Image 1 (cartoon, helix red, strand yellow):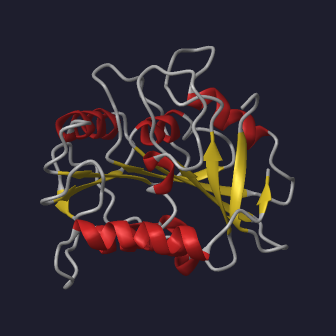
Image 2: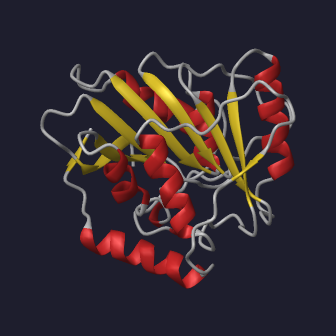
Length: 241
């Protein structure tokens, strides 16, 4: 892929708001991020969830040039900013939702003039990550059993961000790992609520961590896989930006 783009999964003709889903990746790779990779597929159920929360908004899937974070000349933040800069003038508000590497990318791009909210799911926020003050609400959610990205590093970044004066919601997802499959209905509900404008309780309390509400549904990674399959079969790319 020679240039970054947005694959639109929901595209109302009069939409002035875009909910942009940013998928995960790898630390270093200049291979293309194929459409059937697990990191991209995991974001598909969030499209109907976001639509349920914001029926009039467009919903798009970020497509980077490369699979990895790489460096300043080829990182997903540059790709994300590039697509935000060239959005149609009718789009006046963007909500960013990202997982893993995508979570890191949306945090870094949270100060873009169009951005009005950042929801980072199991983000990759290594020690020393530069602080970026988002223009809208900032919510972090991380599984307690994640062994790929560190909940402690997310909490540390949230603490630093709060110390800088930015209210943040930090949610702990008990029993969940990096794939976000074990409690799929709860992740979907979080995305739906955030798209609807519910940002949970933002706080400047440096150490505050709130639990993500647990649904009545039994925990099941199989349900999460089925959610992906259903979303991928019932939705399609309807346009590109």
